[in-house]
Image (cartoon, rainbow, N blue to C red; front, side, top):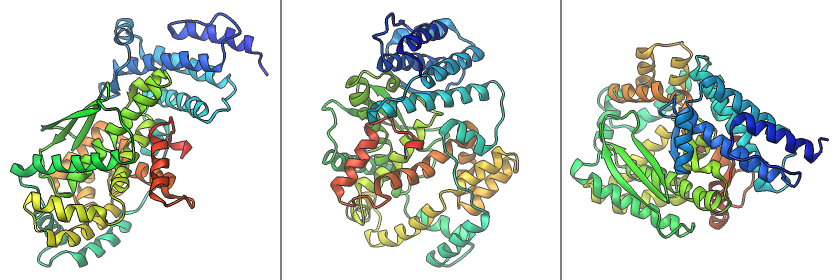
Length: 436
């Protein structure tokens, strides 16, 4: 086994290569200090990748001078890759920590750096299949289902929809009856956010000064987005290019707000950045394994906030009347939505076929229309998302399944407090897909 002095000397050499801020000078420096400085170098590398990929840095609220220094250096892609490899080798030379949270941090830094290196390879021209890309970037591969699998679900849907026309026409007609009128949209979304926040705060303590601003936007590839600002503040944007159905209100409120993205980022900043001084959580690399945890926990947050039949009850008693919809039809509406949820992976399959070159853009749109019940316009918007974010799509559904298994699987205690404890543990730790 290497002596600590040997590792410290190697660390000093590595820091000279990666350009970190300071170098340890004695054998008293331990693995904790090594990881602290690797963490700073990781943050700088994420910011450096952001110079070439406008979507890569989803959030940053660390020192402004780090960003300024990265921008001034203008490190090339090959230089970024070399520094990432040096940091990965440096971490491998360390003994993994014994304490669980420190060990999770060690794995987090190693895995995120590996993902960063893969993204740099892609920016440099490397091509990968859909599954190769998702494994390299997100440390996970989504299941594959043939079109026949989704057709069997459509057969069940066929029995639930009112008669008259093709299944596509009947579904569109059914959905159009549950669109929130534009003049009621803000009131419905605001009430949903209030409810999700109240339910989350019953279980999770958040800083008193946390809050977010809600904006309505157009001309985006996504339907909603949380831009975390740091300081426990978020900007949440909702794309209103397409009509919003009634289920979208709670979906947005939980996913983007409570206990979803806003809550997750607030807790990471409060517990890990401010509480432990771990700078790697002051930056969020979008195309990284952290996104599977972020999107999966945001989607599962709906089930946490509204367990059992509580979502149906809240929708029927509060949101349906607020939107001017008939509460008596809420149950039938959600029976259809449950079937549509089972078709969630169809979007992954369209992305896989498209990215692998098995279908062109028109073919991907046709797949989404036939197997996922998208309208032609909705399918085109979804393809626009796939063009921009590629295999990122797995983070929503596979992430949901992995988080659900973590919280509720393997004979876990089903008591509400125990479920919230496990969920909170996920939101306040450096866990990644491999840890689930």
